[in-house]
Image: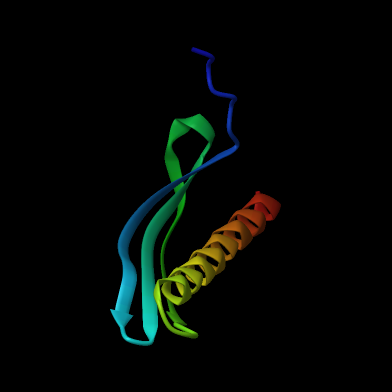
Length: 88
């Protein structure tokens, strides 16, 4: 096995909620931490929550809303990493 490349940051995620919460809405809640490199020192911890409307009918509409929710939280995490990396 190859050794992993050294990382400047490490993100650990714990998804606490992800799914349809009503006929017209999905929810995603994620607790996440950002650690500095391999020393595992947590430099930022946050809980992100996002609700998205289900637009349309059927399973594909639910999946589309869940995908939007994942995208929003992913961008939130990426922005936090950008901000922290410019501060250090």
